[in-house]
Image (cartoon, rainbow, N blue to C red; front, top):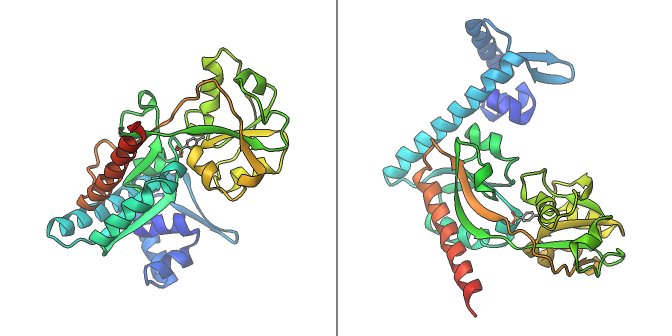
Length: 300
Ligand code: TSU
């Protein structure tokens, strides 16, 4: 099962064998044995590489969950025995990465130096499959809790602050009402239901039709650069990303007076998979800094 998960992640049997300290023939033989037990081919080998058959894809979903469950079970037992080791896997939104994550990780890694942290970019709803198959322990991402699937749970952290951003050369750069942005070309940073699509909700709230979406750019590294290079494109991003991006001198915040939705950043995890003690500790530090942040912003 671990081998199949590695084959999917690394794209080749050779790379999977080498990650598992096995020879390629040994791994191939193990997979052939599994295929014969299941009486179904799982992989198709060709000169282009290896792909999963539809049996393989179905089996892989179970394999991923079992591999992840087994990792969590081992981690949990050793952590309960006082051996703080293992891995915590999470996905984070840009506002979290640039905001409270560095402090939370600083605390966590100094307290538990032997626990590895695996952190990647990710937003709801894109991270749902990785939460479902157990690849991720949890995600720190905005989510509309009413939208959330039944197998996931979300606990609120704080509301993110969104700004509308365009190039300083964009004729709409000084607009103050959303209706002045109706004819702009929008770059969204996530599909509908994700925080990158808040502008759709903002337009709806003031009675405007859907914004004209020209591009979906799910890379927050590319987004500021792409928008800075055009005098037509407009986007939304978390304020903290705008304040920290390298392109700031070529971009500006459009001073819109209409209220923009504030995506609620939450801890999201699978309902039926309890967090390991280490994952709970890390979430605890994140909650601690989220609370501090809210207390600071509530001060007069
Ligand atoms: S964040 O989740 O708060 O980082 C976020 C991402 C994208 C947009 C707003 C907020 C557009």
